[in-house]
Image 1: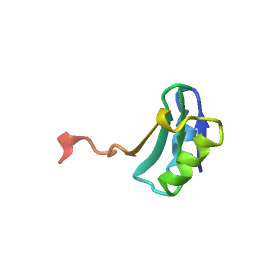
Image 2: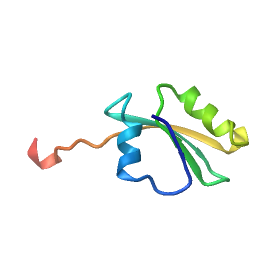
Image 3: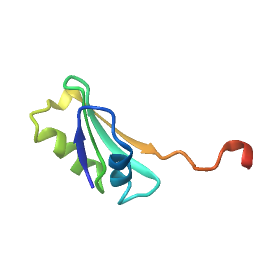
Image 4: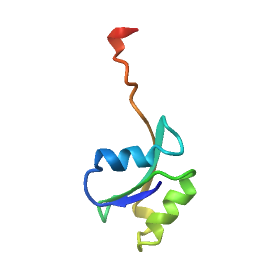
Length: 76
């Protein structure tokens, strides 16, 4: 599921953004409007979500965020 948010994501929103890929979240941030679109299957879809809210192309930054492992590094 994709979310367009202007505040820190809730744990539920993060879980919903992990539905397609359980180990990463694709995000696009509008640095001028301070909003984030996250989730979805491809970066183009997430970017389109921001663009539909009148974001300017030069203000959009995309990233694929890797979900941290639930195991701590000391347990390896």
